[in-house]
Amino acid sequence: MKATGKVVLITGAARRVGAAIARQLAAEGCQLALHYKRSAAEAEALVQDLRMQYGTEAFLIAGDLSEAETPARLIDAAIEHFGRLDGLVNNASLYAPAPFGEITSGDWAAMEAVHLRAPLFLTQAAAPHLRKSGGAVVNIGDIHAEIPLRGYLPYSVTKAGLLALTRALAKELGPEIRVNSVSPGVVLWAEDKDPPDGDQQGLIERNALKRVGSPQDIAGAVAYLLFDAPYVTGHNLVVDGGRMLY
Image 1 (spheres, helix red, strand yellow):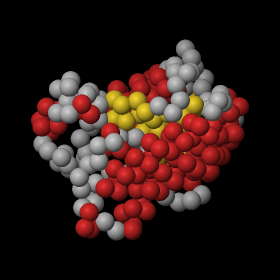
Image 2 (cartoon, rainbow, N blue to C red):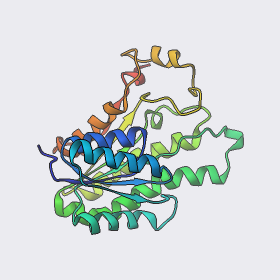
Image 3 (cartoon, helix red, strand yellow):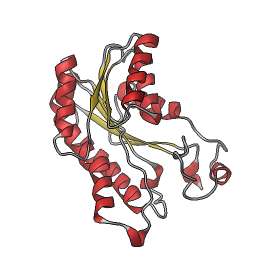
């Protein structure tokens, strides 16, 4: 398999879509550096499961991506452990409402730090190693980068910035490094929150495939862009069941 023995760092890997990406890449033979912020128990359980099920060499790195020194520290830790880096998946994300009249500078700064600053500086720190390996970067965006979500302005705008960053990095880092993004539609309901733009059935009806996707749909797209798309860069792969058609 093309991915066998490749080393990939995934941010926000302990749960939900991040954990699905880790499982997909482990199944394809990757070695994994898995970042988490607070979900230590879930992260430890994931690593144990990957080792038991796939024999994956995986290790954990805790860190707050809003802190300026964290991106370089994560890359350094991955290189110290594995000696190489073949892929970077910028998956960590913040998702929270911010009604327009109530947006604070803190709301904006938190979203900008995780969705823009961290992916930029993670990629900057990873670039020398990815050049050596001919590696790739995949950023996890959102369809609301292109269809802003009412009441979620900082989230939508910073995800749009991540899409622009993806394209800019593809120009900056080619031809040695490919940079792409994946924009999910509805694949998981937000925890302890109602859907922000209608009930669950309403969201499903505004979807060409009339169903919710799964984290595995996103994980498969990430694996494709990392290892099976050698002539694809600067691309945003939308995985939304046709949601953007409505």
